[in-house]
Amino acid sequence: MPKMKTKRAAAKRFEITGSGKIRRRKAYKSHLLSDKTRKRKRNLRKKTLVSKADEKRVKLALPYTK
Image 1: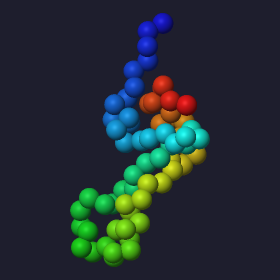
Image 2 (image 1 turned 90 degrees about the horizontal axis):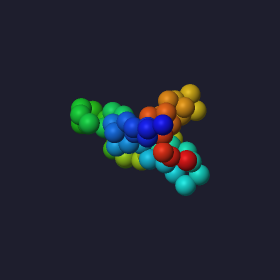
Image 3 (image 1 turned 60 degrees about the horizontal axis):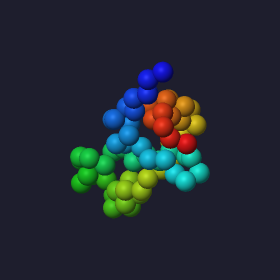
């Protein structure tokens, strides 16, 4: 059976933690930043975990991960 292909778009957007969870960047940090508070922009810099509902779909796009 041939190797499965990794979805390159997903590989660039997500990273796998040591325990096998999937991390992602937050949305709403690209434009219209003058209307957002300093605190909100600071919190948007941090990464967060993918929700349980979406985790299965992301793992299908990244076949060779834990």
